Amino acid sequence: MRKSVLKLGVIICIAFVVSVTLVAMTLPQIHQTLFVSYFTTLNLITVLFTWQDKSAAIKGMPRISELRFYVLACCGGWPGSYLIQQIRRHKTQKQPFRTIFWICSWLNIIVCLVLLTLYNPALFITHTN
Image 1 (cartoon, one colour):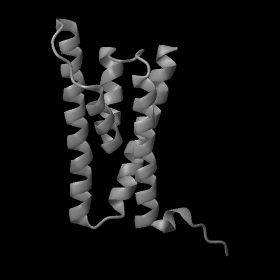
Image 2 (cartoon, one colour; image 1 turned 90 degrees about the vertical axis):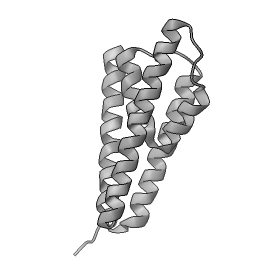
Image 3 (cartoon, one colour; image 1 turned 60 degrees about the vertical axis):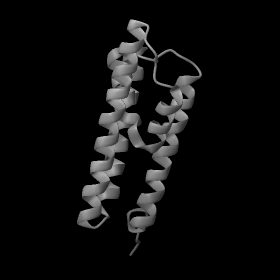
Image 4 (spheres, helix red, strand yellow; image 1 turned 60 degrees about the horizontal axis):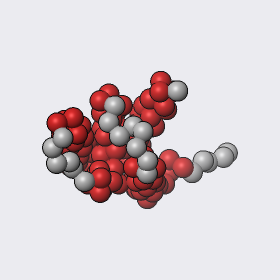
């Protein structure tokens, strides 16, 4: 089961990266750079936070609040968080964290799709001759 969950998560992460790329392609050059830089930086920060939280859990030290992980997921940091959670086996079984985390992740995906639709509606309109 663990391998299938990891596969599904990786597929969703790839779909997200593709949607971010599509949104970025519809933007002017300067906005493309900012957009891609934003998501890259946010995911790196999220990976570091998740790594640090796992290390703190192992050492019995103060932890990072789950609310921060939810906010990062809503803002687009969920792919990095998900992948590092699987690699370090961190919060992979904890409920309701998993459910709320995925709700936040899907909210981010929906916002990205809405932005994609607003910035380039031609991607979703089919022309028949």
